[in-house]
Amino acid sequence: MTDLKLDGVRACVFDAYGTMFDVHSAAAACRDDLGDKADSLSALWRQKQLEYTWLRTLMKAHVDFWQITGDALDYAMAATDLEDAALREKLMSLYLTLKAYPEVPDVLSRLKDAGMQTGILSNGSPMMLKAAVDSAGIAANLDHVLSVEDVGVFKVAPQTYQLAVDRLSLAPSEICFMSSNAWDAAGAANFGFQVLWINRFNQPRERLPGVPKGVLSSLTPLPDIVTG
Image 1: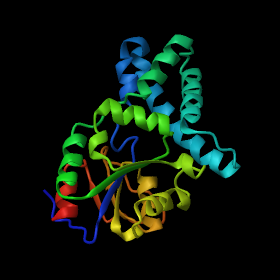
Image 2 (image 1 turned 180 degrees about the vertical axis):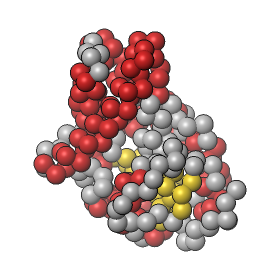
Image 3 (image 1 turned 45 degrees about the vertical axis):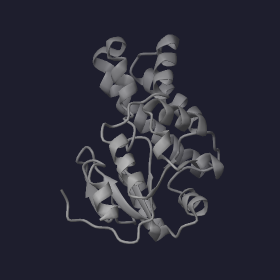
Image 4 (image 1 turned 30 degrees about the vertical axis):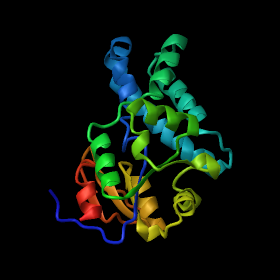
C-alpha cells in the first residue's frame, strides 16, 4: 500500500511499451531459437528502438514505430550474429502480441468502475497498438488509444503529450500519466501531467527536467492513488 494521493485527476493515460506490455516477452518466447543471446538481443533491440525515435526526431526524418522496431531488430540481430530472415519474421510477429503485465486488466477495470477515463498514449503505430490491446483483451476498458503518428513526431516532444490534452479535452493537470520509461515520465511531468513513474526494475532516476509525483514498482496501487 501507499499513502500517495493525487487530487483533481479525471483521466489515467498510460504509456504502452514497458508500462502495460512487456517489451522483452517477444525474445523470451523465442528463447529456444536465441539461446544464450536472448537477453542481450532483447536489451539491444529495445535500446536501439528508443535511440532511433530520438535520433529520427532530431533529424526530422520520421517513420512510424513499426519501421523503427524492424530497423532496431535488424541492428540487434547483426550485432549478436543472429541474422536470420525467418527468425526476424517470428520476432516481429511476436512484438504485435506482447504480453501485458499481470496487473494491467484488473487496474483498468477498477479505474473504469470508479468512473475514470482511461487511455494509452504511445509511440506505437495505430496498427501495433490495436494488435497489442486486442491480444491482451483490454479494449473494453480503454476509452482512448492514442498514437504519436497523429502528430508525426516521437516522445518526448511536447506535441505528443498535447495530443492527450486535445483528445480528452482536459487540462494537463487533470491527466495522470504513467510510464515505466524514466525519460518519458520526465518529459510528461515537464509538460504538466501528474506523473507516476512505474519503476519496474529499480532503476536510478534520470537527470532531466520534470519530476514525477511518485514512483511505483507496478501499476497495482494506481486506482487507490487517483480515486481515493
